[in-house]
Length: 215
Image (cartoon, rainbow, N blue to C red):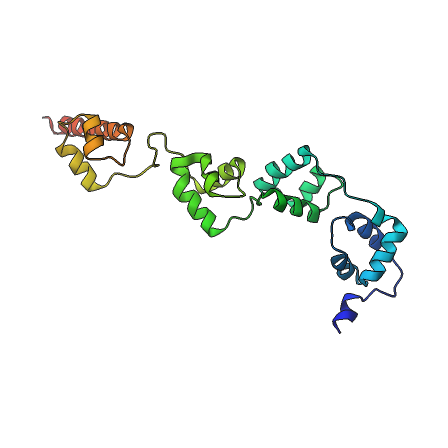
């Protein structure tokens, strides 16, 4: 029953469309897959491939330029049909296969665990987060970070972390200490620049409050 479905066209004449599909895909798709798509037996596919000279043809080696196109555009999430225009002579299956060989993942599909890593580490690492995301490059990371509204913190090596009420209280109680002393003894997990900016915000808040209460 299955064979009759798979090989529904086995006794039918080959159409121009069948022959074109065979010529375009014989070098990149398994014979069994071509057989299923055309509804013919693998033996019939191989025989016709011989008649057309397909089996004598070998796929040209991938050039560095072609591989760079995959690294840049496939990682961006470029649609497969557009990729075939950028890579004439390469089928969609061949492109997917090379992307897998290169370890490049499509920018269109991110796994949940990858998104979690990006959200957690991008603020402190920027595009260097690729170290934690095998198969993702700087281009795809920037694109996804932009979609998620993520930005790299400029004042902290550990990324942006809002100050808690407890931290503000602790900072205010110890304003007699220098920035370096506060950072070293009270906020060792924050950079000096982060502590300095927090002090500036606190002092500004006090000045504004004093001005508002002055008769």
